[in-house]
Image 1 (tube, rainbow, N blue to C red):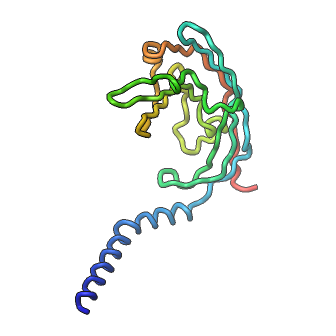
Image 2 (image 1 turned 45 degrees about the vertical axis):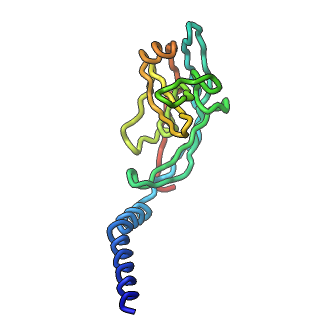
Image 3 (image 1 turned 90 degrees about the horizontal axis):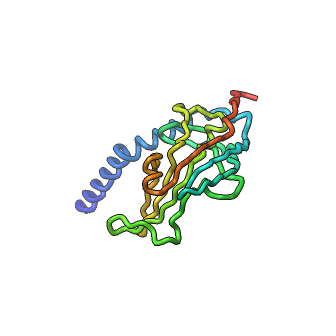
Length: 193
């Protein structure tokens, strides 16, 4: 009986230590964020932003024209920003991104012992930028004349990042010539309606 009580006591002590030192700070953080104020809803919740990208690949000039569609998507919260407005974006063409090059279906690149499927694309920018929601600060600057890449390895891992213009030309024979987009709107976020 004493052994059983000792084991139960140790288990209760471990459970208490877990709650106090590991779970409790996260519970407090979560509760604080949820009790914090919800930011005001935007006055303008939908926008369409036409753009035009001209580029050259292997000496051939190409033009991509599309429209970035941005929509308010409610609110979310995390430990970095507290509660914030969510936005979603999509291209009117239905394409996933402004694609410049895709090695999918090709033999692919090999780094070490990993075969890579790589996508080179231009990122038109986040919806919050176009919808005039700079609440999180920092603003946004287009990457032009640089591009973005996404790599997917056979083992399921992957990477994303920016490719500088000189590397884009040297390694992929791609040169971005011009980027023209509709400027962001001026939005209002009234406290009450």
